[in-house]
Length: 160
Image (cartoon, rainbow, N blue to C red):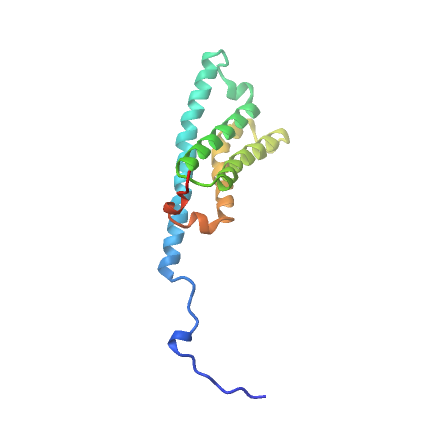
């Protein structure tokens, strides 16, 4: 059976969903979101970590990282998650993506602690690796919500 050929008019031609510039803009926003969140974790979390271990030293735990490396890694993961939750809620993000992002830090810490207990991660690498692995885990979580993290911050505002 033969079908007559019909030419498409320009208004009926298929249209790409997004232009290349819109895609590039979205990728740029995704990258900026990632860098912003890494900065929050490394700077904000880093400040909290210094304060925590400084307070521990004042209380007589002079080298908690050496004496209790698994506990130290867990504390660092929680402090990184706390910095992330604080920043994301300040930016008016919904609770679900906020908790997913914070969970990535906790999961990274738990994974490293498990690796330490199994002898895969050395004691000297355990504590310094938490922030780096938390950033990698964070990007994995972000990839599940590309539309959210590739859009502008303005849509995060919601009624309080």
